[in-house]
Length: 270
Ligand code: SAM
View (cartoon, rainbow, N blue to C red):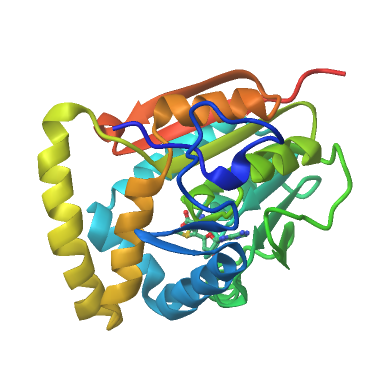
């Protein structure tokens, strides 16, 4: 059940546990192997397609549990009034909605996402709720953020990391953007504990693509979501990747039997 790191995360000259049977210039897109440059385009296509029904589908697929996972993530972030928060792959702004009142008028919350359509849906939704003052919405690729070093107190990524092409490189980018002592929190689907696994597999492969077809009229995107979860590194591998990217106190907490895990790490104090 060990998921490998992606080849594209290999450091120069590194072999060991990394896969050596695939070409260096391809990566996963769900269960398909695609050229590196193509993954971004395809991921964008998936979220263009699902954006209008994204929030409803989240509630249906998780039975509302995603709200609890996200609340827990925000609680663990321990953000304070005046903090600078970056929510990477922030999509329709679920975390930003919770951070905004916490950091207050002296702080800021930046929602960054590669997909303009997801941000557009989120921005409109939060504006309808009166949340505008301390939010910035930025279309950007998490793997190369156009921002200076040491800028944020907290960085979160909820259900975004598995879509990124070079996960190790993205983690290093998040560390660059954090101020010394700042915390990264990555909430992501993970590998459930054994008794849950057969039920979870049956549910995700049989029900979720059908729900996608029924609600969003798009079975393929939801098939990709299910497959991308299976390709994502397991808890221990991702914790090692945090440490490799230079994070201190890298650890994780399983939620709902490991269906989801919250990974955390800190940038060293200067
Ligand atoms: N964080 C939101 C949430 O939890 O509801 C949205 C999660 S959604 C499953 C994944 C998001 O990751 C999408 O909005 C997608 O556009 C974004 N994404 C994928 N690859 C990205 C990248 N390289 N840089 C920034 N955002 C990315």
